[in-house]
Image (cartoon, rainbow, N blue to C red; front, side, top):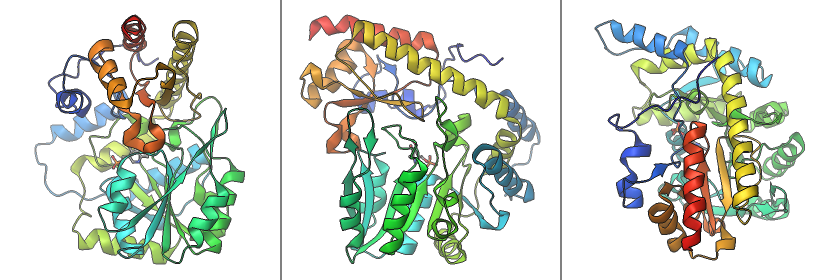
Length: 390
Ligand SMILES: Cc1ncc(COP(=O)(O)O)c(C=O)c1O
């Protein structure tokens, strides 16, 4: 049994989630439920592996050996029933940097890149900061979940200048796990119009409530040849402070193009601990992840129940994956600036501004449920109590 109820003091560790509160919210005095990392200890097995390596007093240039790719191959098979070859894998310094390298490698300035909005904010900058055009394919809220607008996708993919589609799978922030049928539709449109799929699957190990993540590249051989997958144990095992991400593609041309760009930017070296953290997490973290998943599910249910009883005007679709929930505050009828200020200064709870995910996020805020239950309870009580000040 692992103890996810334990409240761990993160102050003094330069944690983004805590130490950027002043900059992001204008105050330190709030419960931070924003940045997507967890307030839980990493699996003890991973801690031990890191400590064991740090006990050796030389921290020189370090390579990743066979055990790195082997751990990835085994994990993809165990967790996603996805058979990959170790020669399809390349280390990356981060999923976001890897998306940038791919955009640089497989499109030209002025080309279009499709994303499903609202979406993880760096997707916009990955595209726009590199001189490409953001093509927004807004997700459709069908009243019980978000879906992709295929008609629009077809029109957007058909544009001469559209070269890439960045798929967020599972989707941050709306929490969808795309079904096989949905992935097949995406593939058939992208294939038909020669649009490369970059599948960001960083949240793939965190499918909840019986949902099953399907790697985009696993749906067919043809899809595998038209895709680069981006994965990492960083979200899964709360080790985002290490560089543990990697890309997978069965298509030699894409792997070569990816490597060329990463090497050209001299970012292939990596981090001393990336191999240690990834291999220990994947090789011995299975039991921990099972317990974590159950804890996250119970946190989601706890929040659902709390809102139903005490704040029924706030709502969210139960996430199919991720530890993030996308809460609709629109019934409060506050403009976004006031909503943000109200939550930060009156409720003293730090959530991500829905608008930072795109215009569709107006009236929404994203809440990170990966905290001990007592912390979530306190945050919800504060929102409940402050509501009378509305
Ligand atoms: C969809 C998505 N991709 C990528 C990342 C970050 O990846 P990295 O830290 O490896 O750059 C996040 C973090 O929240 C994310 O939600």
